[in-house]
Length: 180
Image 1: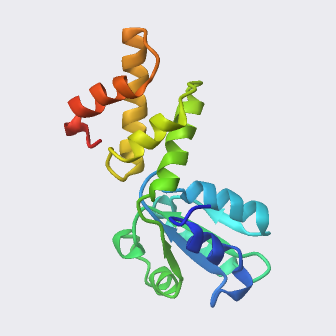
Image 2 (image 1 turned 90 degrees about the horizontal axis):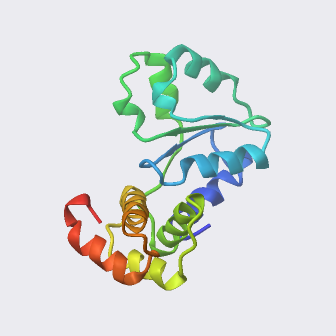
């Protein structure tokens, strides 16, 4: 855990203290919602519904009602429930009573870990100094991290070069319009 998600993890670690047996975890794509949800499900006898805004409102309503302190419910979403447009007043009132935990964009530590993970998922070994260099120069978002790793991978393959700071400098300095 890093500072960016430590408060959310602390909340999810203690569902017995929640005012209702349901919590909604809200954050942008790639912010760590799924990671925290898997950790929550493994740590507690709880239920997880990811991308709750896309679930049938009746199903969501029944899942909310079925949650208990012994089997809490964690919902994840990119958006606040007021933006879901589900149209069920009873569900709306339950969601209004549901604690909402928000994940923001990553801090430097989390962004570095994500960049390292993205390279590893592609089978690419890079030096820690490259990751640090990227963290200091790209936009503070997971989308930017994904874009820069993909672009560096493509450029390294096309040029038949290793991914190094000089290559990253060329790509990052020449690709400002991509948000990194």
